[in-house]
Length: 174
Image 1: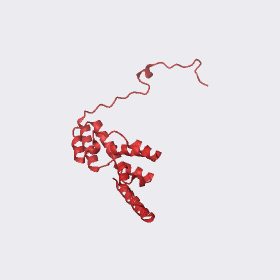
Image 2 (image 1 turned 180 degrees about the vertical axis):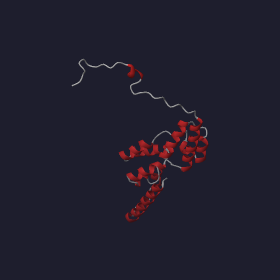
Image 3 (image 1 turned 30 degrees about the horizontal axis):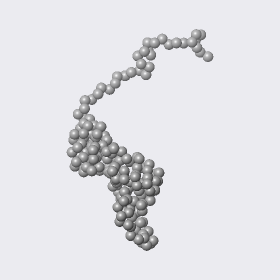
Image 4 (image 1 turned 135 degrees about the horizontal axis):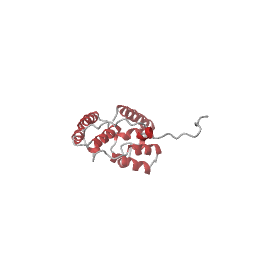
């Protein structure tokens, strides 16, 4: 969770507390609360829901999408869910801890390392994981043989310089 998200969550929970005290709301039905994708979902406005989506795993986002489609069906929330829903870079990635991810990176190829970096930046953004991704990525690139840069090739190719130029009869000028 980013600091900005934490501040937003704190402010929105303070606002909800003030609203329920002033409105004299009754207690939330625990059975209803259990069916929500995450605690307090129905009490959040569209912006608050969208801000909280990055704090959830792919499995939880799937539950949010199903609930949102069957209840409020808000297009901006569904669009954000489409953006965020993607395959995990490794099997059960969202359930792995930092140490487990770091250990798995030791055997990963460059493509997987790049997927982990992109996924981590998009979701959890954990500094320890991103630093290790950078170290492993650098080691993998250093271990690969360098490919030679392609030689100079004129834009017209080799045939352009030896081919005769067709000019219209009479000089072709105005």
